[in-house]
Amino acid sequence: MTANPLVAIRNVSKKFAGVTALSDVSFEIKRGEIHALMGENGAGKSTLIKILCGVHKATRGSIALDGAEIVFDGPQDAEKGGIRTVFQELNIVPQLSVAENISLGSLPLKSGLVDRKKMLERAADALSGLGADLPLEARAGDLPRSSQQLIEIARALMGEARLLILDEPTASLGENESRQLLSIVTGLARRGVAILYVTHRMHEVEAIADRVSVLRDGKFIETLNAPMDEAIIVERMIGRPASSLYQHSRREPGRELLVVSGLGSATLRDVSMTVRAGEVVGVAGLLGCGKSDLARACFGLHPVQDGGIKLDGEQIARPSPAGMLERGLVYYPSDRRTEGLVLGRPLFESMTMGSHRPARITRKGFLRTQKEYELAHSIAEELDLRPMQLDRTSGKFSGGNQQKAVLARGRMRTAKVHLFDEPTVGIDVGAKADVYRLIDNYADAGHGVVVISSDLTEIIGVSDRVYVMREGRIAAHLTGADITEENIARSFFAAAPA
Ligand SMILES: Nc1ncnc2c1ncn2[C@@H]1O[C@H](COP(=O)(O)OP(=O)(O)O)[C@@H](O)[C@H]1O
Ligand SMILES: [Mg+2]
Image (tube, rainbow, N blue to C red; front, side, top):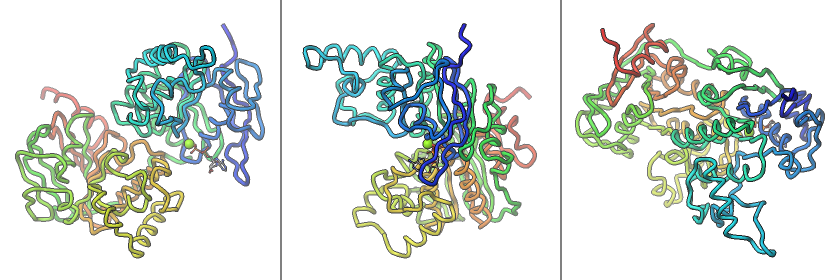
């Protein structure tokens, strides 16, 4: 029995020129626990991590590992102490193979040369220890980001790891990849590796974290134990009640702007939905229930066999993204990295283009008129985009700010109807509040808004009416006081016998 925590952070402060990133932060990490670290962007999470892994030196305070105070002179010292880190920005050498990337920093040598056989064996062991299966000789740069992340984790675990630090590991992963990562994380914790885990995804924290520590404005607020209460965590992060995240004005809905009737496709069964001017319609449902395909079908990205779509009174025979944008229907995909943004191009372009066929527009040198740039700038200001440098490439912005840029598209054209698919997934609470404000403002301006989300709190916070989908069908339609978490969740599953 050891009484000492694995890591004790004591009164740690960090000042950069003019900026206090951390002030007087103290908390502990226990052996083998999954410890989430949460806070708005700029709260100091990454700075704390960089101090723990020896990249930065604390201005004040101390860190004890296993009861002994430690001073790291660099990341190597932290690694020797068993502290391993996977940063937000991945460190993959794209030209090297998977096995070589895993072995970076610990290449096995034989008479001065790399022992390839041993390297491959070790890499294979490391991956299978994670339950991951990657082609060892493939070029790392050719693999998806989720695989590159596994490479980094495998590399981090090459030595003896006691604490694995993950800074927003699922930020750019899809739903299934995130699940795989979470199960790897829980597996490691079961083997006794402590995990310090930064994420903005509340359901991940609820699912796997033993404890969560919250930072706000560089200060330590509290460490909370599982089971997690989302409202309390959000309140600690933003410093005011969680309900204040949502803005929801009273409105009288107007004419029908989007009428979907009897839609049938490979995944949709007789789906009907109406969206009126000045209302926010929520669509809830579990993964795979068809709610994303519903939005994609309306935008012409998901082929349908039956049913009809009417936009502002006009029957649309064959919806196409270009045609729907033209008519004022804007779709905001959930996966901003594959459908929403062009990461290598300036953010400005992602704000102004349609969410389809970006090449067509960019080849023509793009519609970069001064007027458009000015409009983008004023919208960015309204959304509190940071940093306010629209010429920076999209990939250099945080997830929350990338999301704001995608969402800004509806402002750049004459929109009537907005279809948001998981508009706040993976973004920090501050950016969430901005997104909710944007959604409410659209409805106030007489637009029709659809919010598809698997976050029930979000659905309830933003919606005037709610459809619940199950197995491709509309399972329930809730209005007014019937919009409760319990009613929605009940409709997720087979209807109770009457
Ligand atoms: N190298 C640095 N130089 C100056 N300021 C920094 C540096 N790194 C972080 N900061 C500032 O410290 C604060 C905390 O940042 P960070 O630790 O990255 O927050 P988080 O990871 O929670 O978003 C922010 O105000 C940020 O601008
Ligand atoms: Mg960070």
